[in-house]
Amino acid sequence: MITGVGPINSQLLSKDAGSVTGVSPTALAPTGVETGQSFAAMVSEVANRTIDTLQGAEQVSVRALQGDADMRQVADAVMNAEQSLHAATAIRDKIVSAYLEVSRMAI
Image 1 (tube, rainbow, N blue to C red):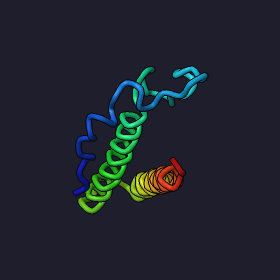
Image 2 (image 1 turned 180 degrees about the vertical axis):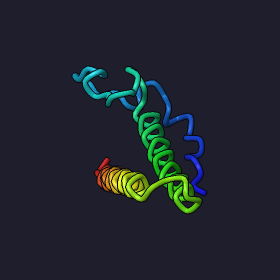
Image 3 (image 1 turned 120 degrees about the vertical axis):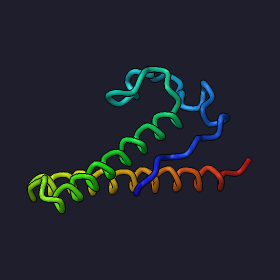
């Protein structure tokens, strides 16, 4: 089974970790994310939602094997899970490349 995301370092969850100067926090917050929430908490929430989507697809697949779900439901759940996984992978790649770029900056 797929497990959840572990706890994030408390330094990453500081008040100013996700702030951007000159931009309203409400303009940056995606739907369902409360205003003032740090970037690390937002990424963690999105990762947990992705995991929930993958677990849901897994449960629908098991129900189909038991004869309780039809193939359309399985296909929809698996396609949603695949889309979520691709999005999470793309976000992870962008975060890693941004980190590497910042680490190469001269002090």
